[in-house]
Image (cartoon, rainbow, N blue to C red; front, side, top):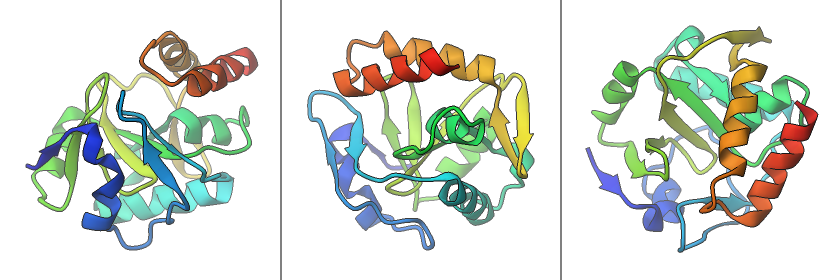
Length: 173
């Protein structure tokens, strides 16, 4: 299993391309932390197609993969778009995925994650808690989203613009 720090984050898509993923128009990494910023604006249709493509590529049924963060906010109708797609799997499935050498594990601020493509990250989460089924996608519940955005908005290492966006999302939930 190859591990990289966030500093190598922007090159992962070129070194480990995943066929069918949406390209990112411009991305950069703030070197003082591990957050990637990009100009992509993924709408509901993009999220649905990318979710199903990721499940198929990972050879996982949709009931084993949860959509979280911005993508979940879009499907719940809280936001209109998101910059990226965050997926959650169980620790056991996460470990299975990391055995495949084409995926790179990146150490994030909270925990390691798999950089599946420029726009999709796969995180491990246990327990998952309640989920909603929206258009065939397992989506984390609104209470879990609220908890998550609250946690993100308090993270002093998160870029100010992202923290402000988190607070706006919290205000809508």
